[in-house]
Length: 325
Image: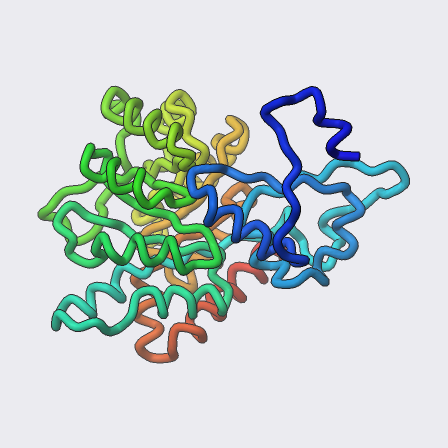
């Protein structure tokens, strides 16, 4: 039937699945065609049974899922066994696992092993920042994570030619462009998409041609969202460090306003920097924030309670808060 439908399109072909499990089919395709961006298309009736699929939760994180209405099937997504539309994703940044390793020049702790444990305990994607000075994450870590993760890899990097070439070789699912200064201890602000427009535009264009999604780490300002849209970014990540330090209601309102504006502009909105359990719960209540990126705090918590416990606790907090709004 499918062959008959696509017969007129010479660029399309039918391929036989190499596994009975959708999760394994997608993973194999992504490994075979690392520069391709896949979309899963299914009928709306799929929702009633998807929660019974093999590794269904991880499958939902692998690629966008498009559901087409099937006559006779009417579903309220929010009342299904998994509330896809409501879920707030958790990205775990494992940079400081590498910081500990590099202090003694050892092979432990193992960045990939810790990242995979975080995934098993609820992380929806893994984030790393490959800095110019390689102060924590090394090039080899990025390649190893891309090969061995069952969830998307989000590569933070400066908008430089060196980093662009590395990203094109790794082909992570997303690159998040961030500002970078050697003298800073950690990223101090968002990238200025307006001032850096001419620098960012060709980098973003090149990344897109390699099949890599684009996120811009920006200050929570409408003007920055406007320029992110002009640059054709898929997502923005709001720098929420000012709120996490001050707990200021004004800063929180600034985040909420920028998130709502991003949504109105058709840009997915994440939040990150300086988040702990308390600030995560507060930001999770902002409806238009779809993911939180948390690193330093979770690694510190892991020293006391273990990686699995820290990630599960964070996931529980943000999920409960999101479903309460």
